[in-house]
Amino acid sequence: MPSRHVSGEIPPVRGLRAARSINSCIIHKAFTMAQDSMTSADADYSHGAVPASARRGFTTMFMIMMGFTFFSASMWAGQQLAKGLDFTGFINALIIGGVILGAYTGALGYIGAETGLSLDLLSRRAFGIKGSYLPSAMISFTQAGWFGVGLAMFAIPVAKALFGGSDTAVYALVVLSGFCMTATAYWGIKSLTAISYIAVPCVAVLGLAATVLAVMQGEGTIISQFARESGTLTAIGGAGLVVGSFVSGGTATPNFTRFASGGKSGFFVTVLAFFLGNSLMFGFGAVSYIYVGGNDIFEVMLNLGLFWMAVLVLGLNIWTTNDNALYSTGLGLANITGFDKRHMVLFSGALGTLLAVWLYNNFCGFLSMLNATLPPIGIILVLSYVLHRGDYADEDFRPCSVNWGAVAGVAAGALVANLLPWGIASMNGMFVAAILYVASSRLMPACRG
Image 1: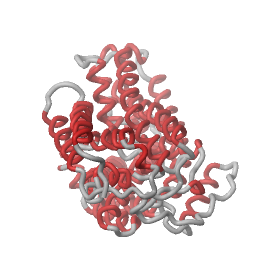
Image 2 (image 1 turned 30 degrees about the horizontal axis):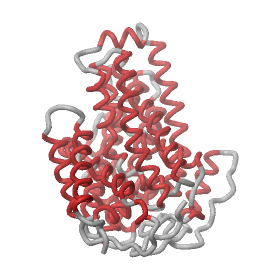
Image 3 (image 1 turned 135 degrees about the vertical axis):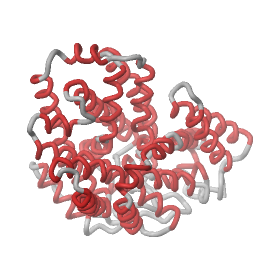
């Protein structure tokens, strides 16, 4: 497991204190880690590889990655699956899409853990020093946008339920939640871990309980309800929705798995978390639709008279995803500007909070289009590692300024993903990007400075 830094990058800070002894109480452990994070100097290694002393165990990484996959928008996709598929088709779509998504994110998870490098530092190897600004800018822009959308996804329904949808209440909740989520993202990976240790069990247990109650109080079985609602969507089309729901966010997987104990651990924890986390979100969304007609588990809980539990589940669900999004934004902007990651988190969090409602009302479609531009980046990072693996262990390796083959692959892949009317958009984009990148790698020498 490499722990040395990559030449040309700022070496990792040494002497990071190990996390305090694990307390049997999960909540106590979570807050202990959050407190410890406040005293750590650059515990996020935004400009260098994560050393062996800062690596974490399987359980901690599993909690972080599960929190990452708890994405409320996936419940919306689950609603679409319930509309278009019977129960067998729904399960098949989850399996097919999960295999594709798991293979993609698992490969990125392995590389991040094996090298200890973030997405942005891996991009320096594949795209060049200045070429890495492209993937860093794209991931930062989309994740900051989704952070703002996530704030509105929490504030709008809660304000509607509590205050009749008052605009003042919406903006007040946006500011409050934006402040809290930005604060935890500011303190970095240990704070993200603390939130995940609290949120993952709460969302999973309460969400499952609400789902079971909805089924028990509803009419008919899940199978009969799916059969009544099923339409013309195929299992392959449903798999496309599964992949598309989180393939863009999954591109940032190395930002988190670089803290795993090794490549195999990074791979397995990622695949397991994406299978379980995504399946839960799709299941919550599907059951919400067929029994209540709503978009997500929040409406199911409201219908069951569990208002405060609904607020807790919705808030924690969005909090984990938003923190991961803002964390990735901070790393990306730090790579471009050279500034401290924490300052970039504060800037992005403030901007996302300020624009949250506008982003929610006007920008979701544009962000969805941008989602298709990120998978080509991920596949190029994977291929760069596979084709030039020896360079990643070379301490004297210095990346070039710009790898134009990688840049062309992303541009062409993004165009195909957004314009080709058939197939799975993200897969189409990755296929084109892979062909161009491999071809350019054969025609031109490695990206060396």
